[in-house]
Length: 450
Image (cartoon, rainbow, N blue to C red; front, top):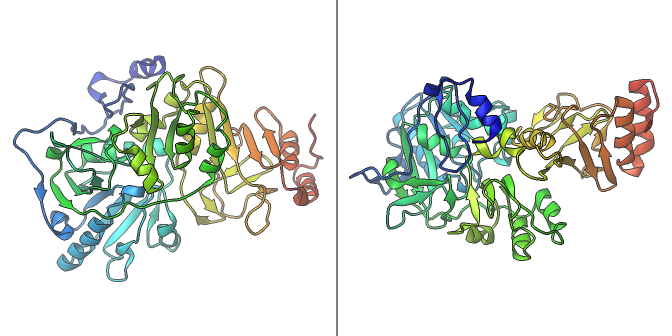
């Protein structure tokens, strides 16, 4: 066990300790938690009930049910469509969907369903932003590594989990494919596990393993997995091809890692936890990425409760955490989940990794906030004051490095005057004079480096 976890366990009664991962990582303990069942062993003489229609797979759902939904690439859209049919046909109400970022269309937002089924969004994607901001869906701010704790602590009791799995192998083992994230917790705690068996879902290794005997209802539907092309993280990875022996420990990655694997920049040779393997909690990308993941032991999918836990992140050698932002004020407060009062995404794992890297045991961690100097509308992302209604995700005390295309600002240990100087220096040249004047008005002193 890691030293920090031994220290934690001294204060937690043995009766309250339980495993949440099949990996070699030390289990995090939950005081007063709900006992989940292990889902990797075969239950003798038990098979899932195969049904042809998705509405039949969700037949056990009743009014008042709380349902977990697998997300991102694995979003089981056909099951959600079947759920809407089932709910309308039976006049059920007050059904809650608990989920991270979902992809695809949202049939439960239709006029004849939205008063029956409501989302509790733990991280919001583009397809639910409108609903979250007009009050049709709920928005929940929570650190990504703590989402499984909502289920494990008993705060949310799940009546069912809707998931997408890879087809069972000759021994009956399926996998959660592109996402272990909080789904691992959900399938161990939900009353019923309802799955789409999809041949397009890659078979993956790690905390994604689930034996078919732990699935209650199964429907075969080979829908195309949701895809995503290009993003800021991929742009950062493109600049690393000349590096050597990089290791990956992250909540998610996309196609950007493929080039680095191909040129042997990523070897994971120096990692102390799961050496030789890329550790990730979920992925989202193209068919090329999903093909790369299939039956690939080079990638280990982990429960987000430990992958994102700062006490685990800090043990990674030379941990470099790169996160983006919507805006940052001259004191270093970072807004990442909203544009003004409009919710955009969620806390996600930004603070998990920023804090973990800052606390790195080897003292070589680099917590980085990276953002372009201007918005697409030409407005500065470095601002004197945060927009009205904007929420701080990463506090000014957590921020160490801020990077734009104009340089690096090192904020940790700096006072407000020095921080303003550093940030103005990396702002867009067209904005610097205005920001300097605004800084003086706010702080009553000119920004300076000394």
